Amino acid sequence: MAEHRAIVRWAFGGGDFPKGRYSREHTWSFDGGLTLPASSSPSVVPLPHSNPANVDPEEAFVASIASCHLLTFLDLARRAGFTIDSYEDEAVGVLEKNEAGVRWVSSVVLRPRIVYVGEAPSSERVKELHDAAHHGCFIANSVKTSIRVAEPEL
Image 1 (cartoon, rainbow, N blue to C red):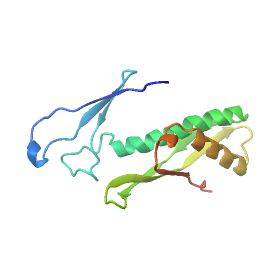
Image 2: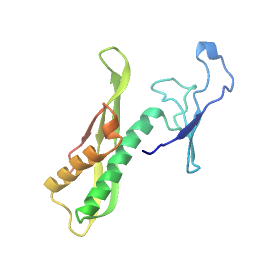
Image 3: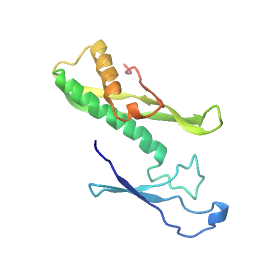
Image 4: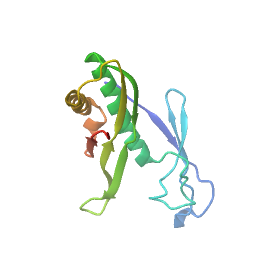
């Protein structure tokens, strides 16, 4: 078993807390020493109470899914004998309301663009590797969000 920790800090910096007029800016700190500025998304909490320059939880959720898929895919491709020069993914998550009217990230679409060194796998093999990466990703196995890999643009 492994534990993964994050420290999330927020402090009231003025405004009218009872009326919801306060900054949602906060920080995320991780065990390696990195601290990131975070905030609510302006699509959830309007400006000026959100900071669009900071990472919001929905973006971080999408990034964690895409990052987990990337890392799993790289390892599987390596084990299959393929060498990857670069991997870039413009992942998109959709926030919508469920049947109960509660907002949730219902789906994430991964759009990886992969550059191989030497021989690239067939499109069928790439699909198999992505499927195996999805099933091997710890984050994908932890959420009910629909996750799919988009067909590559030609």
